[in-house]
Length: 241
Image (cartoon, rainbow, N blue to C red; front, top):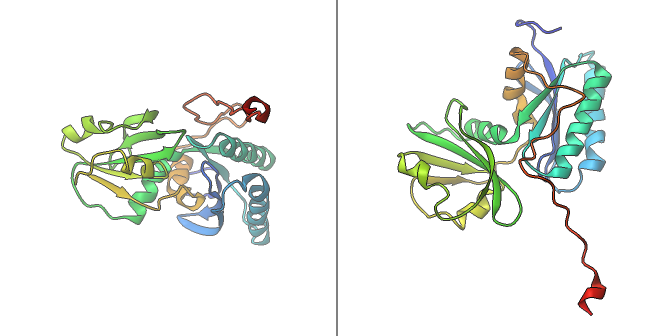
């Protein structure tokens, strides 16, 4: 069922970073959730966590209306694992699939956890990429994209255009640690530590997508990688002889 009065029960999956997390939400409430912050556990823990949520729903005779998944940008491996699990669930349960942008998720998490009542504030989520690169975007308080998601090589002048327009910039995400060491220390740039993308914070974006019937294709959807995957070749010790 999908009508405006129905409070959807949504199973959400987030695996775009080192965090592996799932959540079951309904009508603005988190019913059950599991997270692991150890990293590189997605392939072993995700299915286990999902089964626990399914068991929770079955025990309460609670039908699942949709599956939501974080689409990236982020870790290539994590995104593939998460989307594969989400597609299998949506197909098996015969429910719609919702895609959530990870950078929007970081922004929403920041808004919910840190009250910032100021004018001209822009949110700059950053996810760690290789070397001095991050995946980033820029959103206003209404979650409108001032800059769409893109890869950025950090430098001292990376945010100069935004700062020249008089904005206060809120920078968060695991890529912000890199940025803190590169960007100039000015009052208009504020770093908020500890913001990680987790499934329970997907609730607002997933429920909005449900209300707007904004679903993605179960068969053909792909993660938002932003860059082509570049495999690292293992070193050959013989070449060092």
